Length: 116
Image (cartoon, rainbow, N blue to C red; front, side):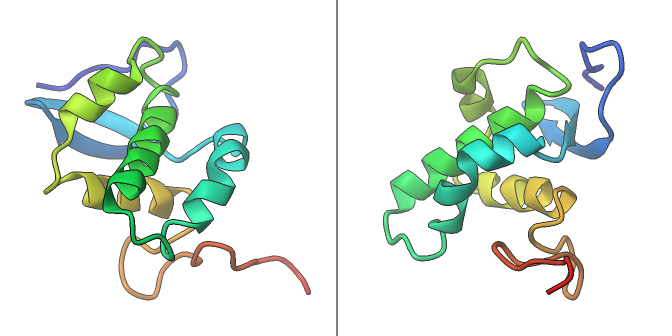
């Protein structure tokens, strides 16, 4: 069942099926990326899997709130499990242009696409 966005003008995104509902999950906003950026950048070097999943959950929540502002962090965390959170997180970052959806697409975290 498709869960329609609850904002007047939904932000484009990738469809993700979570808890039996299809959600339209957009990229992170600039504000969310600025707020989470340092923690996102530290994900690759962190060996703390629990902390990594916490940051992934916060990023997914920030992205999903753009179309579903009523969702709480706890609700979003309940929609994912250890098997699905990483794929959904990579989809959101790929939408944001930070990591590729597919090999060869997008920009790795921390790498600039602007002029040098």
